[in-house]
Each structure stands twice: as C-alpha cells, then as structure tokens.
Length: 348
Image (cartoon, rainbow, N blue to C red; front, side, top):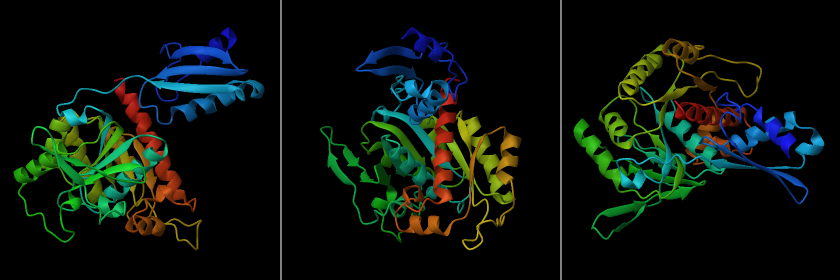
C-alpha cells in the first residue's frame, strides 16, 4: 500500500491548493477484500469533496486500480460555540442577501438549500423576511403549521416544517398571507430575534438565512447575534442593483462577515424557440464588473427561465426538475462554488 500512499501525498486539494501530505489528510490506506480503502480527513464542509476526489483519482490511478478504490471522507470538526445554544449543533450558517427586492434572492436561497440537501447534507432554511416571507410558497407549504410546545423552563419551542429534505421555518407560518407586517425597525429586529430563538433545528450541516432586502436592523441583528460563516450577495446586471450590492458589501465588511461571493440573477433570456439566442435585458457583465471592483468572487450567472418561475410558484425548486434544464445545472454549480469558497475562507 505504500506506493498508493506515496501517490496520494502529491495530490492537491481542489479548493485549498495544498497537497494531501501537507494537510496531513491521509489517515489510512489499506486493502480489504480485494479493495483499496482510502480514508481522508479534510477541512469542512465536505459536501462535494468525495465526488471531487474520485474524479481526481480517476485521472491519477490506472483504471484497474481506480475501479477498486473505496473512498471514505472524514470531516474535521467545525461546530463552533455560538451565542444562542439552539445554533450550537449547526456547522455552517450562510446568509443569502440582496440590496434591493425583486432580484430573485428567495428563489436562489431555496434552490441552494434543496441542492445541498440533494447532496446528502442536513439543511435548514430560515425565511427572515418579515415584510415579505416567500419560502412557504417556494416549498409549497403555505398551508402547513409549525408545531410548537413549551419546554421545562416555560419557553416556547417551535419545530420547522420539512419538505424536499429541507427544514423550513418562516414568519409566513404565523402570519396570514395577506397580512401586513406594520413594524418599525427596532421592533422588526426584536420580532426576528424572538422568532429564531424559538426554533429547534437539531443537528444541521447548513442553515440558510433568507434575509430581507436592504441593509437594515435585521441585518445588524443577524451579523451580531447569529455569527454567520458567510453571506452571498444576489444582484441583477443593472446598475441600480449593483449600487445596492456595493452598500450591502460595505455593511457586511464593517460587521466582519465573510462575503462568499456574488450571484448574478436574470443575467440574460434565451427564447425557448431560439435556444442559440441570448437577450441581455438588464445589461451584460454587471456582476463580473462589480466582482472585480469589490474583489469578490462571482459564483455564477443565472438566466431568466419561465420554467424556473413556474417551478417556484408551484413549490418545486428547479434543481429538482426532471427536465434537465441548464438553469438547474447552473444553480448546482453555483452551490458547489459557494461551498468551495466557504471551505477556502474557513482556513483564513
């Protein structure tokens, strides 16, 4: 097994750019029942790493060896102690944010959550847009109710609704659909705090926060109390959205929150009957330009899609679509890029 061990030592981690030897990642290489069992311990999150490394092994080893490899990936412990005890069983907390409404932030957040769950991760999503909660619609659970009970200390404990493998909590579960949340900023932040403090998530690999648009009290409360691992900024290519991205990025930098990257939504439109044609309705390359300006990674560009809109309205995120649409693959790639950047930033 030594020759395999020596070969593994030279392999470079696809995210971190370090060799397995330098990371002390090779825990064991042994033969069991005619199979080569490789055990690696890698920096979290490891959601996509097994498949990533299998692709590397396929190029590294001869076929007769590669076909006999069993790979086990162990995740280095990453759960940090957070201010709120209910969050201490959550490995990674990621916010999806936008400087303005109407850019498709909630749709992006829902698809990211579902894609992570599809990859085998334990995922929750918290819809914290008190003025306009929409995740109940995105997941098709408008008529569901979050169950609640009183714990031994007399505190209310609420349990998320589950759909598509994702635990969902939303202020929409406790508001009538057409009710207006007539709250001032400080009260808004207080309602937000009371809401998330009552939710029992259990153990999660990822908790996705769908933040309200803008840069207000909830964002301050989120950054200071939740201690997120990172935030993703969603924009469209047009200048009015990009201006809000600048403000959002500045706020999160001031608050010490890592920015994982930018997602440009509504990048272009491809007519279903002319698949080779692209229409840049809101402008072109706005996300790339703001990424260069701010020194931020562009995680991907998502085009307009009638199917995506229809799927969102019907409670089925497009990453679950059976049609094989290119929007589905783009969102899968964006999620993988986000996780890779989270992993890179986790080692500072």
